[in-house]
Image (cartoon, rainbow, N blue to C red; front, side):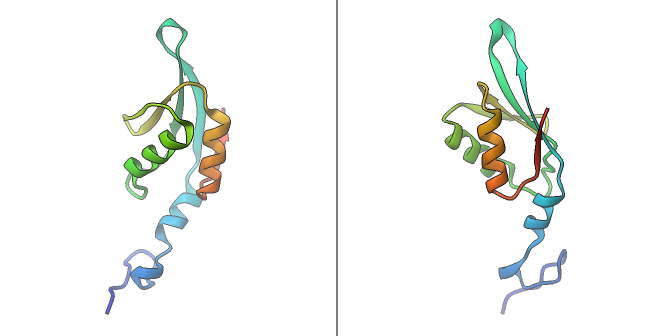
Length: 99
């Protein structure tokens, strides 16, 4: 017999805590220019406690075909991928805005 989720009170197989966490977050996507004019797409506002950041970073890097890193609680992707990142995040159930 499976356990009960302490967050939503449902059985762990059908737990909706991560789905609720995705909908409640306010994610900002913007481009920052670094040294020598290199562009970095920054994804900020994701709560690391409720979302698996390593898995999300890996998914974004694969979809955008670029390098990236997890730094200081936000995701940095090499290049200007604002529109593509917003589409991927919305397909995953996140609510995001472009700044």
